[in-house]
Length: 219
Image (cartoon, rainbow, N blue to C red; front, side, top):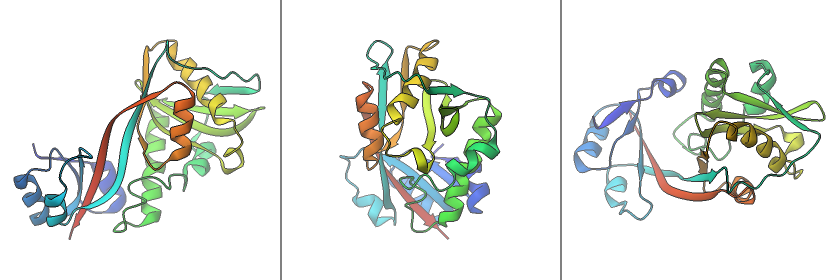
């Protein structure tokens, strides 16, 4: 199938939303004739002429940090702790508006408020599946890291804890909890998110599988 519906996005943006399986001519032709918001991910070195010809526009470049248990560099801190005993009411204020690097936030055809709501809804779903760790400093909730399988899928710190040099301790605590059952951890981050890149590199993560993300809104 050349397109896959993404109903969680459609529920927020109130238009049909799809991920395209490829950027072939037939697929792109379909995207300009059937209403909806379309996402396609392509090799950064691929020619983008056809995408531009069909009205697609660049939104982001994603890369995959990955690290084995053996390669991981831990930074322990006695005043950092983690717990899954957190509620949506506690973590939603940290999540809302935290994802300036998100491809939906950078899409000029989408409402920024709805883009923020998309991440709130995703966090709520992850919480319902018991996949969210709250990270604490001296007993105070500082942020959250959601882990789905072996992938760190969503994470944010409250404004008071950003830029304080504490992130490596929070990530260490969560990664060590995950490495109790896993051999490899991964994530996906925007190449423009330099703090996240530096953080993952400091913990021994390497990077692979870059993709350019293009969107199109067909009225």
